[in-house]
Image (cartoon, each protein chain N blue to C red):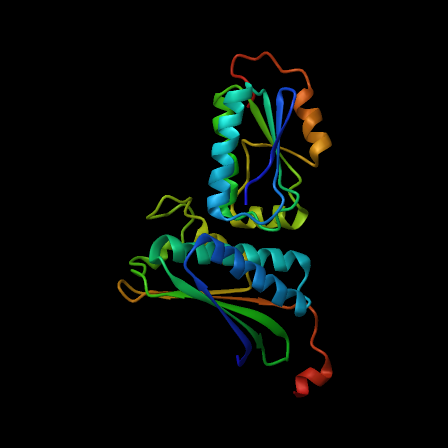
Length: 146
Length: 124
């Protein structure tokens, strides 16, 4: 998936979490994602970006526009940090499991909100979460050729 | 950004006007609790019409407000959850089972002003 139109939002405070999801919503609007999909994506970003401020203190959110082989466009969100990483990813992906004070809905909840969810992490290696939400609008023929 | 809280008789109305940071949400919780105590309020309405995202933190905090105020003898009603936001909350796993909700401010006021049921286990 080639990426274009990158934007990087440093995540260091709870205000940055709000900025990240608002930027993503703007981008989602440009791509004509439905209002519901914009909300689902913004909510998922809120969850993964909060994990950065809670567990890693600082990190960043990268937003980019991606295309699949049919020319369909989507928004890719990468939330990454150099924090402590997650020891047991399988457990972290279960509803209700948390090592902090939250509800344990962050990662599993975010996964349910978007089209694609993947996570790369290891203890001491930081965490990288990738989300993609695809546009439901079928690609125009001229875009497929591009 | 502080959330304005308006006192209308025995009811407090907190109207969220813009996106809230986690710090703002915690401030709202503390402000509501302080005002419920000061005014001996019987009901609280939190209007979330302006919120375009209610993630697990906001949802949990509002649930916390509802539970805490109930222990003080006051009912909280969350009004104005947008349809897309409701959809996202369900997907996320936030069901708000023990929290009163209403369509809008008017319905929320009607809900709080209905006669209370005199049951031993209270409202539930």
